Amino acid sequence: MNQRLAINLIVGQGIFFLVETAMVHHLGGRIPILQLALLRATGGVVIATAIAWSSSASLRTKQIKLHLFRGGVALGYLWVLMYSFGTLPFADATALSYTQVAYITVFSALILRESVVLHRWMATAVCLTGALLIAQPSFHDWNVSYFLVLGGTSLNGLTFVLNRYAQQQDNEVTTMFYVNLVSAIGGFCLIAAFSAPIEIPDTSAALWLSGVFLFGGLSGHCCSQTCRGIDARPLHVGPASGRGSKWISRLS
Image 1: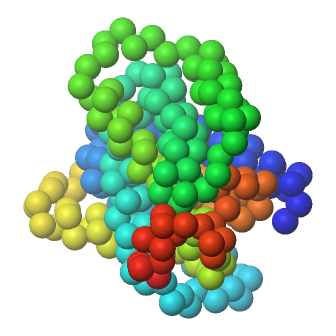
Image 2: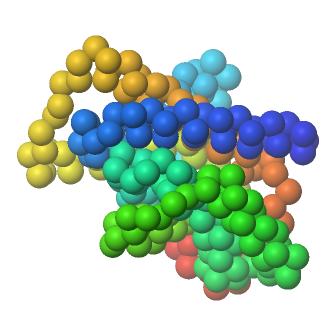
């Protein structure tokens, strides 16, 4: 994949993510978080299956334990995502979501023991600053939920790093399929375990939910494709990645 295509995928992922989160925010907590997360993960499974079927891509994997771990982490972030954009002011939730850039850099350095040079840290700081200037969050009702979302966004950074590691052996469609499959199964089991109510949406809400189903899956697809295509050397996870990679390899 060339850099231009990878950049286009990043832009596409950003657009799909924006549309998805705007729809979640519009729903405004009318649909339970567990139900939204299950819908989002199911959309990812459907889209990954459709892509695999149309392209004859294999969904076989030898990294089941790694995918189970990734799916659990991704499910945790889905709850954070749905909670933040469903309850916090949209600008504040958007600004907090951009901290994933810093988390990705930190996880690549600390967990995978990759070398992240100074200019990469500076680029991360510039990115976060630019995101804050664009989103212009107010944070006027700052409370403990903001800290929960700020910490929970780290799960998305960890999912990204693990996705890059998994793609050493699996293709992009396979990694997308399993992370969403595990998240969907986990979400369904938790709904059953806690006897969580299932809201039957009205016509208006159903329209917005269909958007979450579709655009969430497309956003995940672009992200999975981008993981392999971008020039992100500090996130490279080759066979000599140090103790962090040895720890993750135990899950493979």
